[in-house]
Length: 391
Image 1: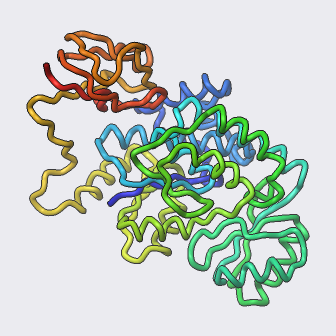
Image 2 (image 1 turned 30 degrees about the vertical axis):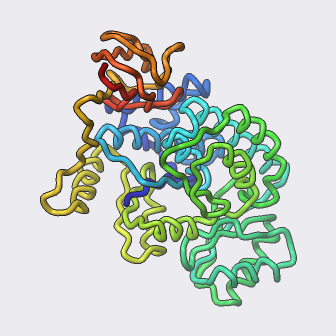
Image 3 (image 1 turned 90 degrees about the vertical axis):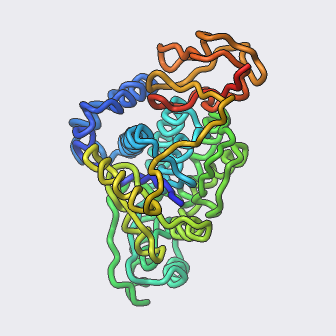
């Protein structure tokens, strides 16, 4: 079983878009720029490290970069059994599974980043990574600091992030060293993320989440808040709101995936931080990081290496002779036409919807059994759109 994981803020790198500039998946950058009303291409190609550290730039560029990698991976026909994302990456995971449309994902991430930026200005804070200390001991250090400091991320065994006021983080860091921490590393961030300091941002985010209205999905996403898989779209309104001021339980998410039978973890997006966390957390995990087009061939080899010898590799489902699939003629955002639904009888050439500006016409006559793609989903070339049964 395969899980796609998506990185969060901090994984961005200057020039991370350059390897993708001539790839077909680069079209996502243009779409994101239109929705966000920002020049995402410039940020991905030319922004320096200081500009990318701005929360509003870091989150948007990491989100778009990860979805660009996902788009390229989907063109290879590789699909996951589960998805999960670290902090911001949870929004990427929800967009990847169709719980959020691409446009809604861009708008929601932009709103989240702006809300967190202003919350950080109103409640100045910082973060630090505590290495080599058990989770419970890090929590003890925060309590003993007797100040505004909390655990923000449970990343992996012996790797916990604390956050809060500068004085609180300094005090907890000193106690953590007394308790045996091997190292405490200050993080270059603009706020105390995933702590009560982010509470003022929740009202703005709740409104944006409600407008996005997350949908049900076939592929579950494991939540940062409760470390459980969720496929019910209605559950994400409270989960995403709570995530802002709750610790990211990433280690627990990885263990949940392992308990579900996942041994293969593919990190899609810039960096490679989550790959190391999976290795540290899940015994026997197979991991790979996909960040550039050059990594795609490695991914194919990695996936096929897990297939039983002699088995057909990356082969789709077989359809009965009376069934037909209508596939996408292009890559882009899918919009169905009105008036066609389950049970509708159609003729050859009937327009079922549009992918971007391209019509999706059925090459078959038959009865529509169901749409496979959902409105607002970003589909790839030859991705199934609808399922028909011949008359």
